[in-house]
Image (tube, rainbow, N blue to C red):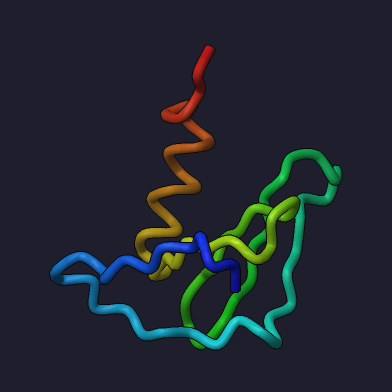
Length: 80
């Protein structure tokens, strides 16, 4: 880990375990576009930047992931 990396305590109510992602099977989109990969680990969904796999991953519960995917499909995160 880089010396410049700052670790932050999780916010109150985080309620998610520390997951061991070292053996995770990361998947990217079928079209190969974008920089996002996901992995299903211990009942959670992890998402990371494929160009910087050493950077922190986002961890979603299945309900959070469903809401995220639905929002993305409906254009909630479009920046244009």
